[in-house]
Length: 222
Image: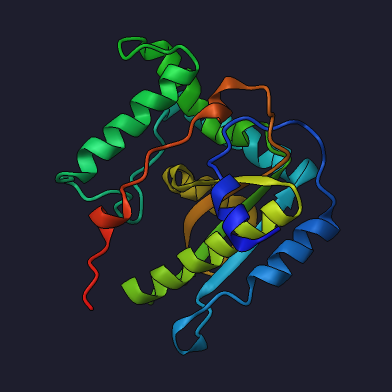
């Protein structure tokens, strides 16, 4: 598969089949993705790949926590700026509206939206969770390094016929995740990522978010 094909076919998959993914394949994907660029070769990331019974226990604990704290705890970083300006606010709003439209959940259907939100924390049915951590001492340039590493995982996964969904929502339950994974104190949870075989028949996976045109995002001087 060409890189351009991987980019064109990569989506945020929100419905997976239960098919298991062999640990050897997960290891190969991470092994290839570790060549992602990193300023000064710091490689300021650490990844936990969780599946099977350890994953089942983790998901059960998160679900139990949600009974008392449906939105978890305050995140250790701002997932979005507090005052999201245009055009970003409109893009985010439309993405959400288009997503819920694929599964017939109206804007005023609060229970339906809550049910879909909770599916985040079941990994949308994926059999593998990847939890990405970053050293707390790192700054914005190193956060961009972690992003490039995660994108590399998403693209290599396509080569294996797999799909992913990067989920910053896991940051809302970082105490539960930390209790299971036991990272060193100087590592902070950035996000989770679901990995598995996409359910091609689920309507939610038909969503293709709009992208700004080249002329909107680039200026050419020659």
